[in-house]
Image 1 (cartoon, rainbow, N blue to C red):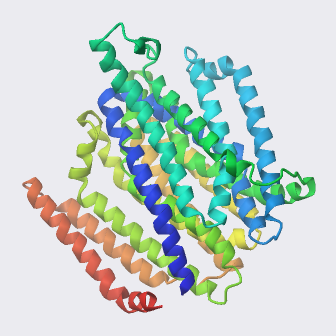
Image 2 (image 1 turned 60 degrees about the horizontal axis):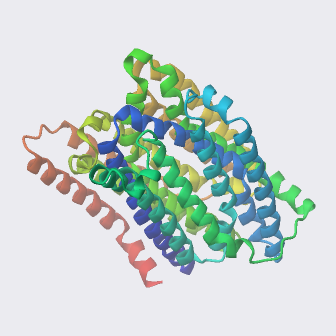
Length: 490
């Protein structure tokens, strides 16, 4: 069980950097909620949804392809340089296209007065896509601490630049209007400083990663590239459809909600409350960073089946604990964002559960990656996207952002069921379905009990939430204590 310990250690490092880093970055959400009106924050939510989809498109599955081939090939340097050169040319080409057609693109997505937003976001996407391979190499080489430090650097610069442009410069100019800072800051840019800050952070990160970029002699192998692309193309489809499932609602809300209902305000409220599910998202992301190279490296392990099953069970337990903790203490969590955004809190439980099922789906996805049947992953993800699009078009006009919350939950539940069915057919793993089902049932019962209690005060609600959470913890302890002790001993 040393491999479980290794996964836990890597997840702890990636998780610490991811949780602390994203937590620090997440503080920009309450910060923005007190600086921008909901409709202004809606612009940030909307444009970053485009960025998420474009980033997947521009990396075209190369990160997973790199792990697949570098993990089973002695010539890692050739695989690394081939992947890096490919992403360099596609990223540069993307930036040139964005600059050539920024005006038209801005008009298409209703930002005709701000083509500069499109240019800034284009550079950010290109840099993030290109640096994905150096970061993947750090993960492959188990350099988790260096990976974490670079992520912290990027987040720190982004936060610092936001504070500089959105708080420090306005304060200085208010008290010293003739100071040098009048050349660095313009109130007319407004929300654009969110994107400028991100751009500065991305450029600094690229410069910092240059030693990793040039660590080996550049050597492009076209035959190898074709093999990587053949493996990665279905992963690209999975990635695009995955981002559609997560972010298309934030693109569709301004288009499907009538103008008289202020769709950008609704999007801003939804976007801020979507971010309240950040703890579940951070947990899933940290797990993903550690688990992807882990399951490739353990493919031939004699105990791999049991290890994968254990990982799934404890992932579900951890996810349920996060879900209940967020719900039971929501009245504390909600204080982090401005009250003008609180009407969207009703969407948070659905978003939390959707993120949990997204993590379960990722956990299940190892079957088609290990068997090189990535096309099946594309099929499942495409079905999920069809469900997402259909439900968003159906529900958003009637229920606004609540329709989006329902759509994303149904999407990931459906994908989880489909992936489990085909996974057991082509790469059977003896998951402890019964035990996980019991924990899910108990968690949902505790959740509904909490909802049905008419609390008379905040302190009573806090007390009851704590008691219910301890009940869940005790259930897990008594259900898993023997296995946990065994794992700790080994």
